[in-house]
Image 1 (cartoon, helix red, strand yellow):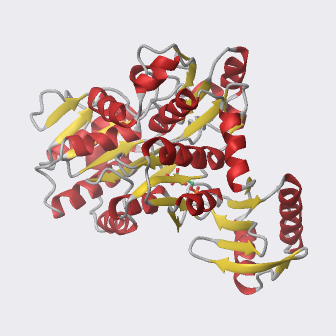
Image 2 (cartoon, helix red, strand yellow):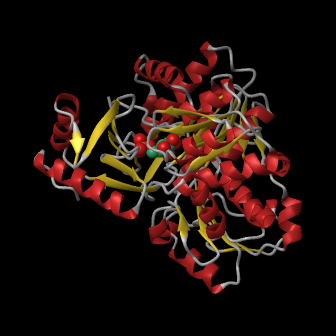
Length: 478
Ligand SMILES: O=P(O)(O)OC[C@H]1O[C@H](O)[C@H](O)[C@@H](O)[C@@H]1O
């Protein structure tokens, strides 16, 4: 029997290999078992899916299995973004949601995220319980797989839902759409051929918004639906050919954002999150807590010091930030991988909200993003970041992590290591405040190395020296 393990955010696998109908049926049955064990059958499960190949068919099969197990089902009427499905959990008072998506992964992947009643990523405890349910299941997957997908509408336990308007209403309460309209902001949106299509134009109706790649293509135009610099060439070209004020991209399930300045420059999430934090502090007068992952810029901490906002560092994974959002007065929580949420919203990252708030910031400040960024740097100093993703063998990964554990560096060039943090990977903070982090990814078969320093030169020196160190450890930085 295939061993299925949940990673940083749910289970993800190759569709032609492990993500097949029998395995999907087993995971669905495990979630159904977990739901019933926690008396969640009456409250029911929302079932959502992204725009990938077969996501809809897997979701319909899941609806059928859950309904047959006596669980009420709210099934999405089309593919919907993860934050929309998460919000629907709250809206319907459901026990949770099953979301079929492999997020920003390439087209050949698919996955399942379980979203509990609090409308954010499942905690480690919940994930473990579901994995335990999975292990204790009998070998009945074949029978499920043979069940067919049948006519769903006739099953009284399955209600087909379109959560769009409720979700857009919620965003309308968080974003000053009127300010964007009044500024006449020209926006280009790139949902990357995926399930985010139509959402930002829907929210910003009445504004001159142009959408590119706004149709479903499960091959994502031949790329990954990942709103990083290298995958946004057309959006950047379109925005800079303008005149446009901003470009907004979302990933495969629209929980991550990509932001393009009016001149076509890509802003990293490490720039976007502090910018939005500043905007929320200034425009809403928010004070409280900022939450960031261990891999995310310390510019957040510095900005927090200026405005009396406490910063809390979490392991990588929005589930940790979501947990803080449920227990502490978090005004913004974000990750360098491109996820954020803000006070008043669900504890789940939301690329649609992030983009709309950035547009609001441009509208309110009446200046391009690079001008606000310059002001931010003047206020808190420069923070430059870089990330390397190292595709290494399991053995090489093990060696690097072992060296971090047993023979950690005491200095990098002239700078002493002031602190080593080991909650997620190995984070080395140097005496001048610069840092680097070495950790295995929980979603991809690679090691990530993150760097931050106060100038371009310092960043080059740091990444060069750490690269040499990794080579000395017998590995090449690829
Ligand atoms: O660095 P990784 O373990 O691959 O995780 C990177 C990202 O993966 C998923 O998208 C999670 O939802 C994020 O919270 C996390 O930041």
